[in-house]
Image (cartoon, rainbow, N blue to C red; front, top):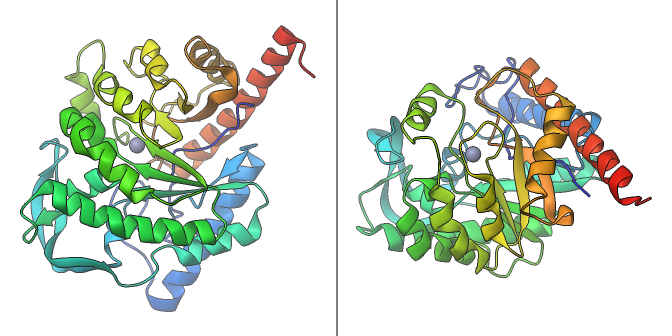
Length: 345
Ligand code: ZN
């Protein structure tokens, strides 16, 4: 009941990379870098356990960025000649690599950190991958000429890696699709289809994370313009409810999403955002439990998974750690309240 979990990313320690950046530079090279990535992964697995989380992840310590970390292992992409592209409908400019030939995986992408995390925790293990539509929005196309066909090509590669992660012992595979909240019509038209293609054949739990982005300035400015009610989910959730994806991760606490939109996800597990990643103010366990209580009006209690609103990569390590603890403590408090209310043992 109320199994606590994070959306995906966690801050990288200062001995691994630059801190509090979305595209941080690594501080080491070669074998030293590989070793440091593994050490950071192990550290965060332990800290998630200590914070009382029920499901843990690798904290995305081995990838520079949640999309480009995957793309680095994809053939057909020119990383030498990056171009500036407005991403998420021009919300911010990013230096993106270019697709110049048919896409193909060079090999395993996340074997090292998935196998390491699996070997060192008995908790359920969640692993994140970028969703096909979000990848398409974070790379320049010089080859496919169609967003849909490029998304389907990426979906096949994601599927290949996802099946391998499942074989590594991962319990939950989550695809991150912030682009669903930007291109809602495309998401309902073909984004969900590409997502299902990425997840086909998986027997482990499948999930999708849809958010309003990291707590960086460009996103905060964008959110200011979205008005009093953020209704993007309304256009995408019905398509997701009909899909084969089992869990949906969404923003709740401190967002302007009308909570009743959660009810559109009937039949799905819902990872409810109870931790704001756009603020350094640490939530109290009471606030976390209250948000869980709010979600219970729209989602059956046994389908609620308290979660962060989004990844915590650009935050300070101290704040992220305090928020992990608030998440774990708040979930425990919600369980206690539930027991008191229902008399459940
Ligand atoms: Zn997110």
